[in-house]
Length: 561
Image (tube, rainbow, N blue to C red; front, side, top):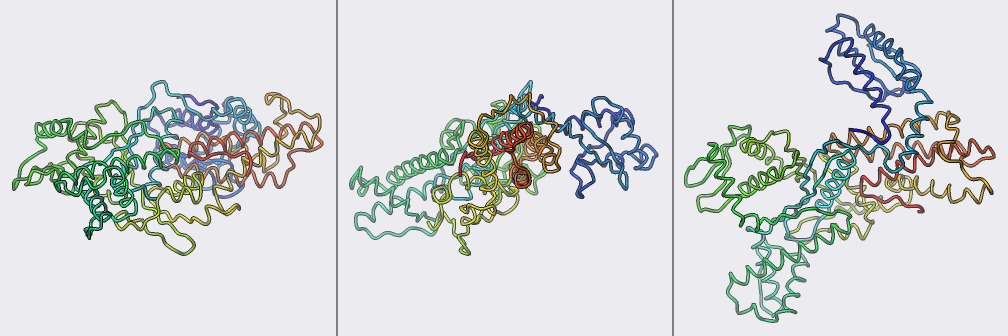
């Protein structure tokens, strides 16, 4: 793979690996580069000497010094990248980046522009991400919105790192929940004609069900009052689910989430692929019959017990079509399948991994990601999100209330395995307490600097970026910014590897804090044309990276706020 703008961290890792391989051979432990916790301990640090010391029969400090000495003799490492190396207590190797390497990296950023950090793979890894896949029994809630924001951001991040990404939505448009949706709508329809009706405890009570019933009445009049119960329920089920799917598509479209492929469970079930998959499992010895039911032998493949595929009455469980659906996804040629599931699917992980193994696919190619729930607060009031009770806040309402940018940013800002408390009031504040405003304001402020340039410095036009004296950027705050900018490709790479888009938020907030501090202490436009040009170049580098980072999250980079 090749970066458009090479990460300094990547250069350092490559040099370290070559030197350590010369010293210790090919069997190297994982190489970890991290930022030291204490100021003055360098820009990066590694514990590789501690991990190699016992095998080499040397103390960690001795081995760290040996690695440092070898590194400092490399022309591609010193002084091109590293100003100095320092062996710290216990054998840690602290790396101090040279200002010239950081300044050179800024030149690469300005040259690459919007492509900085983008990766090209000779053979792109094909990845399918299935996410949201909410049952079409009601509007999308904020819990679905979190999956949508996380899944789409992951797709953008993986595509940025060179993968070929397909976004997919699985529509559960059949089964008991769809029948209950249809019955609930039918009851509301009857109610519109003055009939007294009851909605079962497991029925759907939201206002959207009444609206669907009113649409049918306006179109068909009293036609369905005299229809047979099963015929009416089937009609109302199909129409209600279809109407809700259209609402879901519109909401996701406005949330900047677009799917490449939609799979209908109803159509999939009619394709014969489920029976075909069961035959494959049966031939492999993974299916047996007990007490009239058909079971999958998942306990033999890591699950805690065997699972029912077909009940004694002949009805399939959800697991049977799910196995066949994943077999179909693999058959389409994807290298990796990533599924985003809600926390109620924790118990599903082991059984689906067992199914993937039974089908003959490498387990590492299937990656389930659990996305925890979101709780909305308005002030101290906790808002409900129950689709059956009808007392919930929809994703549409949140988008309309706080805007798409704030909603998307807040919904990806925490680790996926952490419960998210979404403060609606905070997300609307125009202050530094609001993280999305804090980051977006950096971009807007830099745009404002360039707009005011002609007004403040009449007749001054910055030279082409390649002719700007970037060596003048040597203040501590400037070097901090340069270091952060050089780390952008690595931040994206780590986010893609961990499948955690919140890492991009962390990076952007660190970059925003560094920029605001630098802007406060150092004037960008001054009487010194060379200094002005250099700081404008630095500001432009920050603008490029902030815009790219926000774009990976599906968040806009406004020019004014």
